[in-house]
Image (cartoon, rainbow, N blue to C red; front, side):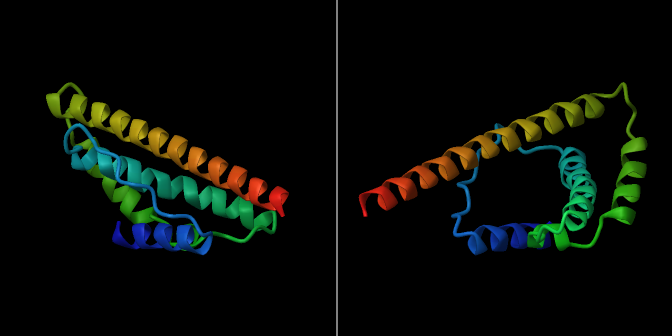
Length: 128
């Protein structure tokens, strides 16, 4: 996880983007929900990296991290051991949804910041 955060921070810095402020979660998320979000996103990143490479696009550092293949398989095995009718399973689902909500909020904030920066750049250029 630390490696992914460092790569994402480096990607932001290389594009002149400040890291987003931390968005608060209402409570700590279940570790299996966090694993689902993190390792699942790595699987998606692998697919996106392949498509970007085929299109000749440069890859952000976060896309160059090693694939999560074995970690994803091990994680799924741990998840499969949770009784799907248990309170823990319900919590994992709720927390994964809460994690997706945090992601959407961060994406909206990033979009707003990027759009505002582009607008400010346009105004500076038109003044000169």
